[in-house]
Image (cartoon, rainbow over the protein chains, first blue to last red):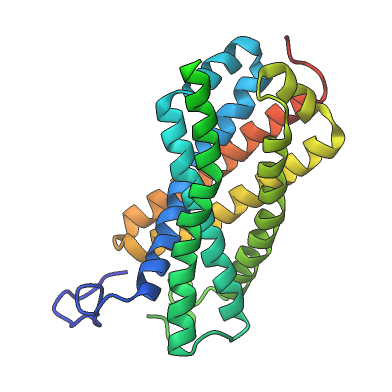
Length: 136
Length: 129
């Protein structure tokens, strides 16, 4: 489909003043795309390695438990939670609720605060245990 | 854009009348992901270890292998639907759009096929220790 570049465009990202609802909307897409590629490939690698045998699984396990593996896992945890909380907000809006300005803004902020807080709650004890093991 | 004329439909313009089904399946797989991914993550945390023997023994149970296959289908279907919208929104050239939609379909189907085959291979007991 061809577009005439001479025609005006509707106001876009650079025109609107950014609000939490816009950030959450774009985060939903960004985390979705990120998980589709990184978590998708990681999940397939994990299963294929397990099906191939102990040796293949070992090379997966080494990468997964390296500092880089932990970094990716922490990022994916946050992405998963952000996408999840944002999806729950979508379910509410799908039934036509939560569109009042204040409610909408509060819910958007809550998804972001929630994803960061729960990520910290999950990973703080794990990292503490890893650090203890490393110190021994 | 297609105005509903016969020639417009022949050229593939306008609505394909599949939008509502796309939207609905995105929600159905979202609920599937919510339930199955929660089960998956909690189960991984409850395993005593994530070494090869433990993981393959775990996947070998029918009550694990089947939900794991369903999770794979739900997740890869969901990401195919979701990324399709992203490609349609951000890639404006028709050739690039077709290329990335094609790539997305191959990725989703190949990824899901590899994962499902691996689960079944483990479950049917063909893995050397």
